[in-house]
Image: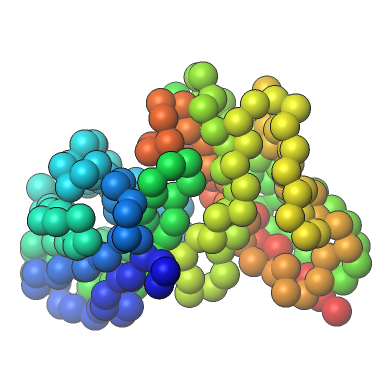
Length: 111
Length: 110
């Protein structure tokens, strides 16, 4: 299996622009997670889905952040409008039982 | 409040010099304690899951152990390729809401 796939790997955008991050989970995994990693706050869970349904979005920092999972093989995390403090590495992870498997991440820089 | 604390923040070892990384947790009703390895520019890579105090798991030069309050990742005779950040995470309410520690940056020098 190719593992969790994320795109783009790097994104540089200007403040106020819309940013969309994409994730393809491992085939057969029914849970999908979005995390954010920063030096100050470490790795934080933003939201997770089970069978394409959002279960817990309590980690989403603001209404500017939204996530969707239209089918079992695709999810998006959208930030609109983006701000410099959103600069971070965003990871997608998936699992079936037990441990979560992470993608390579998207490094977002908002200038 | 559930919390995971790792120490030391950074560790420098000579090749072959064994050591241990610590992960202390305060989680009510621990369901699982996870160890991950993260290389620069990459996502965390799963290493071990421990479920109950007294449990031990091994993989090559790594051995993870668990007590009621902490977990240790023992590294025996490390090699430069073991250099990475090691993250631990705990969960209480299932395997979905992992609480990660800040990690230990390990550097192994030849």
